[in-house]
Image (cartoon, rainbow, N blue to C red; front, side, top):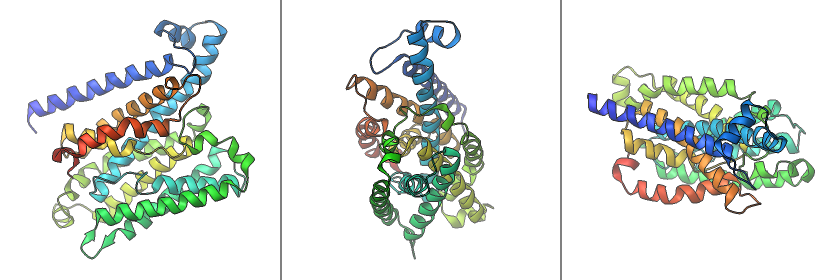
Length: 335
């Protein structure tokens, strides 16, 4: 790799990091009814300040900002992994039904089994994400290999079926799901920090696995035969990638509900900038995906003040035009 290319990518990572830090502060400053200054945010976090500012910033904005950061990182990494694993530029945990599988499993845990704590239903989210991933991969396999079109169709069908089944389960206990109404739409509003801590260790393991298989996934992008000739253990790489994908997509869904599109658009943007190098794509996705999620959340707070739009709805409107522009570039959409 040439020095100018490394320098360009390093500068890009630094710019993405600065953008993320800026958006974290903007998220802390912006509320549904008022916008605070940076000094007010600083005083509320680290000094004794007015009761309203302290309450609004520390009890409401801080948790949703942390959730946006963590969930965005998970979704961006999951999207980059699933696109590399399937060699399909249209792959995404939402499109392939992985998020729907996790959501349906959580609905069963809450509505049927009465599990209300995330330490209980996160295991159902992991199981649902894993089962749907394996089913879609199996349905997308043909004699000629995995077909991207068949895989997407299979994912859409499985997601639609599970979405309808999840809605039916929710009707069995409306009171239980009334408290999770924003979760059903994909939202980080009103979710306490307590829902993050149990899943953080799984995210840490998934990120380590994602970077561990980045090199083998680069080799597999040239074809299984060439990858095997280079000494890549194909089955091991796929298993580790699926484990990481399951932990990331299932954990993100357990925390914030089914948020789509983030894992589809961000890896495209990263690939357009750094090329087909999975480690760099992961690095950029980890920084850019939470930026997209935080921007969408801030827009959801101010577009319909004093009401709010769930972040899962805003991400589609924010990302769709960008994705259309990106997929028209062969360099961005090709794998």
